[in-house]
Figure 1 (cartoon, helix red, strand yellow):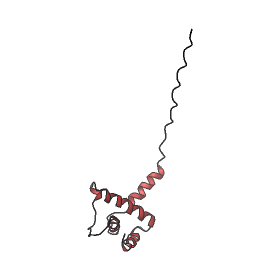
Figure 2 (tube, one colour):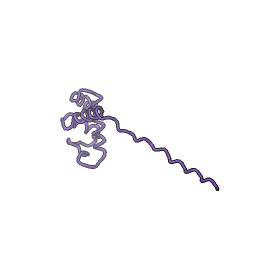
Figure 3 (cartoon, rainbow, N blue to C red):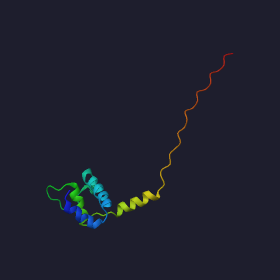
Figure 4 (cartoon, rainbow, N blue to C red):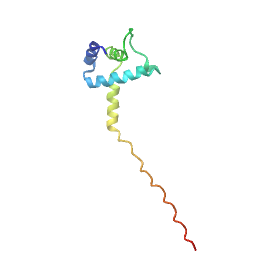
Length: 99
């Protein structure tokens, strides 16, 4: 990962923790290889890794962190999913008494 690109992207985002999340999500998209979101949004030169491409996309305002902030807000508001209680196994019927 290019340190100069990292510094410039950090100036855009302002928070290193958010920058790490943005870059890691974008790298996953770029490496997935399927769908439209896996194509670089900037011109790629030979030797650029996925992280460098993602950093350059942040620098050129092709991607941002608004979506991550919105996802985090939804996750905080949404209650955790309810778990179903497990049913106890049915008891075997008592053997009939011999007459």
